[in-house]
Amino acid sequence: MDNQLKKKYGLFTAICMVVGIVIGSGVFFKAQTILNITMGDLPLGILAWIIGGVIMLICVLAFSMMAQKYVKVNGIVDYAEATVGKKYGYYVGWFMTTIYYPTLTSVLCWLSARYTLVFITSCWPDFPLIIPAAEGGCVIGPECIALMLFYMCCAYFVNAISPKLAGKFQTSTTVIKLIPLGLMAVVGIIAGLVSPTHMLVNNFTAAQNIILPDGTTKSSLLLAAVCATAFAYEGWIIATSINAELKDAKKNLPKALTIGAIVVVSVYIAYYLGVAGGASVETLIQDGATTAFTNIFGGVLGNILNLFIAISCMGTMNGLMLGCTRGMYALATRGEGPKPEVFAQIDPETNMPNNASIFALLMCGFWGLYFYLACLAETWSGPFAFDSSELPIITIYLLYIPIFIVWMKKEKDEKAFKRFVLPILGVLASMFMVYASIVGHGMENVWYLIVFAVFMAIGWLVNRKNKKI
Image (cartoon, rainbow, N blue to C red; front, side):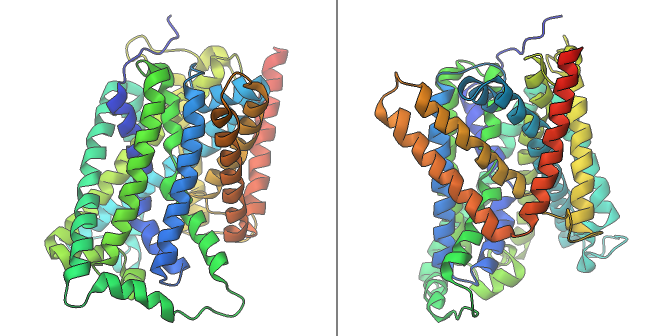
């Protein structure tokens, strides 16, 4: 059996992978979150989006130069192994496979289900839900959870059975999701400037009247807001998981990462301004971006926004599942992890690692259950309850730091900009995100790190046992 993945994706698909994975639900619901965190300070919110975008761009450029040099089967694992060493590459791959990919994928499956139900109930207010929509049925109701599991299985099926179809779906959803974002950005900014109430100008000037509570500073609000942008900006690194399947990967992957990142930052900031031109800050904090769409485009198009959000989430979900299905395979091809001879197998019909894909689905189910119990239903709080949509993202920035440092030590043939400037900026950007997480999440960081340590210990035991066989 040939255990090699074929070159089946081009540059445009790779760009759509970056844009499609990053632009998901985050831009829609994190805009409201950031307004809440900054207490309606629009300029401070824009600054948070800019800082988050700059951090992403710095890391993208740093990894782009690595993508020009290292090509194997899974970008981030390749870079970690080539710089720090094989053991570090294994632990990065284990983390990506058991925590990073499945936590984000499960959250996006839920968001896809949530916004599907929001669209349905906005069009048909009498649609029967066991828990009425007004009481949170679209968020935690049994219909939402059932639909979440259905989407999870569909994403697995598409990626495991037909990777080419998964690539086409990614391209299509990326184009579709840019339509409402572009409309809101252009029309919202114009409407906010020329309307009789001068909504956009008023929202900017309103920041001058905000009174901060005692003990709260703008810098602390900014750090928490930047931390919130992490979810909205995250996912680009997953595009590196297809470098073994990308045509002319050394040339096309760096292009895809850079172009995709620039598109994402531009769209996010323009959209944020457009939304602020469609409704007052107070309204946006309370009701979200849908109000801005309704005010500008009318009730019908305002409801259709929810459909676009659902499609947007599905595109991101598909891209995340794509990374999930290749996680264990990336370890197995190196002879590492549990049963490498099993997880390294490629199905001759689909040219996909089916055993690795099944493991990915199980991990998504596990983390989906955790997310529901700890973050949605709040079955427990306190110990080991943390936001699984954000904290794994912060961990990946922490794992970037040794890669950047060792790159500077090893790559003596590179020019100063590539050898020192970009990696140093990458280290500073990563440290900033870690600090922002500490400020923004407090004690949740401790509970998460304990869980992280347990998973890493399991990874160590699994690989140690495998080496002894």
